[in-house]
Length: 198
Image 1 (tube, rainbow, N blue to C red):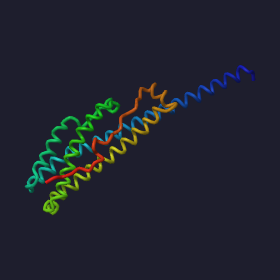
Image 2: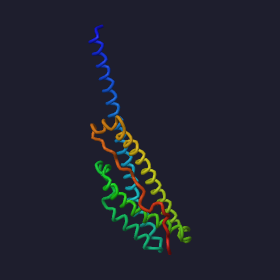
Image 3: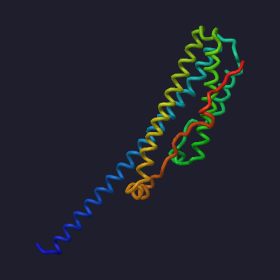
Image 4: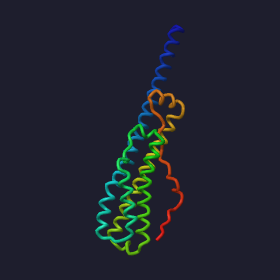
């Protein structure tokens, strides 16, 4: 075999290996991006569940309760302020300001729910009431599901961001038009336990 043929075979093999590596990287980045989208859909699903569940529970409890109405009103108002802020489109996942606005709306409702749960803990007569016990269990379950969905979303975002910010993924991500996504961040003051005053 001549030297020219050997060089040609080596070049073809090298091009084939590079093409295969590029396709592998491209597919992995797309898979990770899809993982972020699925994780985000799960977060939205849990927010929607909370959004739909609250009025039904509150109406049930209102029929049986005469307690700190301002806390209950705060929950209802926080829910109504959210309005259309339950869903974000794919482009917004990479927009830090849009993610911050979304988180602020969710944090407002989450804070109101946390205060409501603390009120139910601090009123012994409410703890004995089955409706309030059920309310508290449902709200805690909702918040736990949301926290877990956020954790899974942040894991998916971290995996994608690591891939598109490192070599050789950074080149393939640029070619594929995939950009880093914004993870959830803790709300300001989340490290301080809330206080309830009577």
